[in-house]
Amino acid sequence: MYRECPLRFEKWYRKHERPALESKHYAVFGSVIQKIFEKFYNDQMYLRGASVQQDLLDMAPIALDHYLRDNYVDWCTPFFEGTPDDTLADIKATIPSVLQAIKDFKLLGQRNRSELKVQAPLGEDTLEGYLDFVIERDGEIIIVDGKGGQKKGKYVSSDQLKFYVLLYFMKYHQVPTKVAFLWYRFAEVLDTGALNTAPMWDDVLWTPADLKRLQSEIVGVLNGIKLGCFEPKPKPKTCEYCVYAKDIQTCRPYIAMKLARKARSDARKSAVALYDKGANGDVILR
Ligand code: SF4
Image (tube, rainbow, N blue to C red; front, side, top):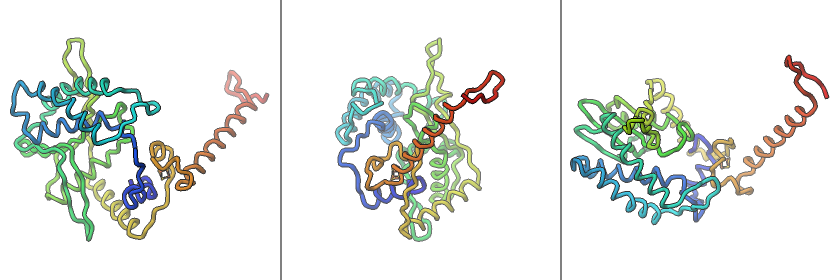
């Protein structure tokens, strides 16, 4: 978060100035699926054989209830269409796809862990991350990050997984052999009724240069925090869902950016109104 906007980081993590009721509607689906498969791995439910799918389906309403008990969800948030029943149906419909993906991508090994907390020292600081799934299988180390989004790529950066590679290496002195995103919603139902899980899987490739770059960026971030640099960095993508965006006192740069964008867009529209384009692309003044 610091890289995206130091001010947002400062308010959220250092000052803990958080809205009393921040709706977590955007995370319901992904968090509940994640919780279910965390139990699948950490409680070794995969050893149950044929009953496992039904057991996971039975767990879905309980996991959803727990999420709703611990998090505030505004079901009427603009552009978010959903009800608890729809969401539960969606979660249940997704469980077989994730089970199929686990089979297809061989995500069970001699050692399987979920929500693994990894900490590694960097100078006088400690880096920390929670890895969704870590599978050790026949000498391979596979790190998988589950994603519940409806669109691939939106709000997801491959740097997240590259950071996990770096963290894992710093902690265990071993390099993961495979890292990937697993997109829960992206299985296709074929005409035969079978599931095609290929679209669920996105490998993340990395090089030693990526890890060096990340490490130096992390050092830069840590130095920025220590020096108290918390300048806002307004960008449409970062600010869109920032809880501080509506706070005019806190975030004047965001408001200024919006006004400047509007002025540019108005100027473009009035310039377009002054001319037409001819059939051959020539500009014809009105
Ligand atoms: S609205 Fe934008 S600039 Fe302001 S704190 Fe949030 S992310 Fe930073």
